[in-house]
View 1 (cartoon, rainbow, N blue to C red):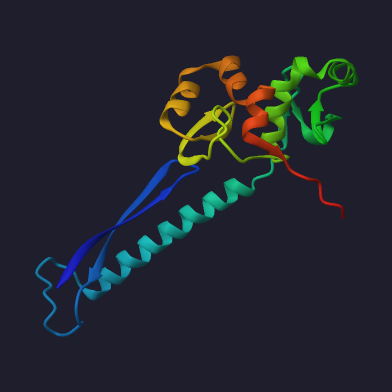
View 2 (view 1 turned 90 degrees about the vertical axis):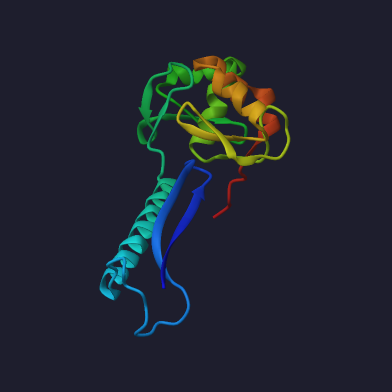
Length: 195
């Protein structure tokens, strides 16, 4: 007998569920397999191969997205898009924040607290900081409770924290997650490796 089986895979980062229906052979393969549903061994193999190709393509796309290096960010002072390769760097939280020009660098160095929320976001966006806890509660994170905040996916401990951030918009949303107090609760700046 041939049965159809649903294969399901949930990816917590993208929030996508990958569901495939695949033929699964139950019992022994013999001349007595019931092919009343117009399945032939060739069709089964083709469907299985196509399903496997879809799973591999989906997995490969996710791996590429995770390792995709950020090449553009917003200047934390002027709020305009800049290429990291051409940006002016400034030391911040034992890491590097990027600004568009030396004037912005001087403003940032004079009073970084004015620009801390955007600088903290940038550290996470450029993978110089990693999320370790919920930025609102300081508790452990549930990878199925995520919200995109200014282009980055942030996880929360529960639906209540997730909902609070999801309902906020623009700078309010950014501040909920990346203001100094929230950043200190939920994120950790990665230690630079000495090469």
